[in-house]
Length: 89
Image 1 (tube, rainbow, N blue to C red):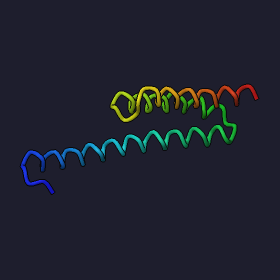
Image 2: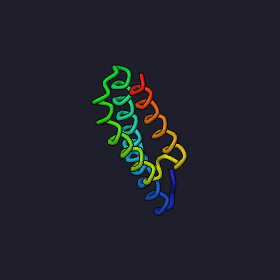
Image 3: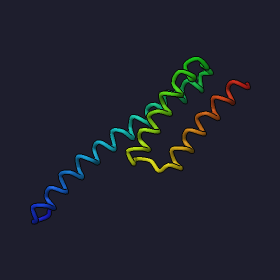
Image 4: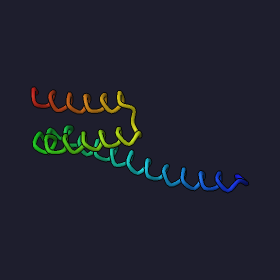
């Protein structure tokens, strides 16, 4: 435990920020899981509806610094590719 007052405050702030980031990352993961379940069930209508919402969550997480830009871009590309493959099949 820190003894300096400013460091005690930083510990509290970093815990709060960690909880917020974990929550945002969890929301993205849950959205991706929902989307992948729709893809797995070959439900194109639901997948098309969920894709923009999922991409929006990923981009928000990217802008908040939770995901690196390349990571977010890769996730979006993979999700889009899954939907395109389902439409072609």
